[in-house]
Amino acid sequence: MLERAWAAAVSEYPRGVRAIWSIVYRGLNDYPFWRVDPRAPKTAAGRAAAIQAAIDDELGILRRVHPRAPVILNTWRETG
Image 1 (tube, rainbow, N blue to C red):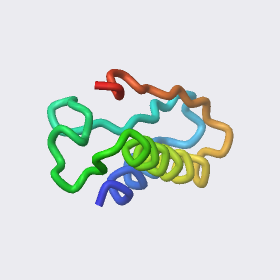
Image 2: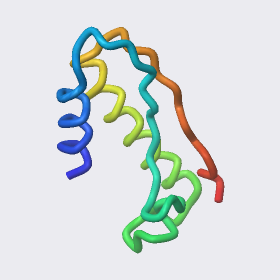
Image 3: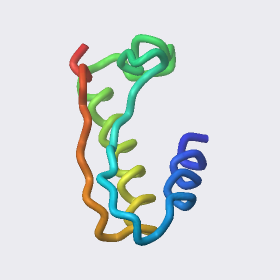
């Protein structure tokens, strides 16, 4: 589901318009996802792997449409 939303956002953004894309994976109400998702990994390593997979997916979607777009990684409070 998230992948469709990310792909739609990227594809709807006009080509040729310069932007810095923010890559991030946050939970509901801006909490770390494991605080609100009972299916979330219980270990730090599992959480890190889930975050890395989401970032990789987001970046892949962006790169397919905007291969050279600048990106900033936003990891605000992911240790929380």
